[in-house]
Image 1 (cartoon, rainbow, N blue to C red):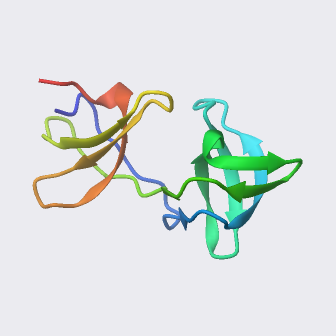
Image 2 (tube, helix red, strand yellow):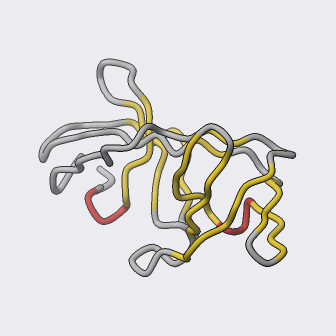
Amino acid sequence: MLLADHEIPKRDPLVVRPGDVVQVGDRDTEWPAFVFVTASHGTGWVPARHLDIDGSVGVVRAGYDTTELPAVTGDTVDVVEDDPESGWSWCRNADGREGWIPHRVLTVE
């Protein structure tokens, strides 16, 4: 169940696949597991552990989808995959839509 609303970013989600080459930007100050990447097809926050980073260039080691799931307080979602290292869970809502939701707004019942 959601303890608070989760609004998604205004930019389009980014999907990176193993072998993709990305430009690596800053590490997120709120979510330190993530770095901002620029790929040929978009931008987004990706866990640094999914990349082999050399300076400002990274090669994707493990695929990642930055899609976030919008939700409002009281919504019930199923946790499909938990990522405690990053502080997020991949969830599915009642309509079957999936995406990441931060742990800070989730409670397990």
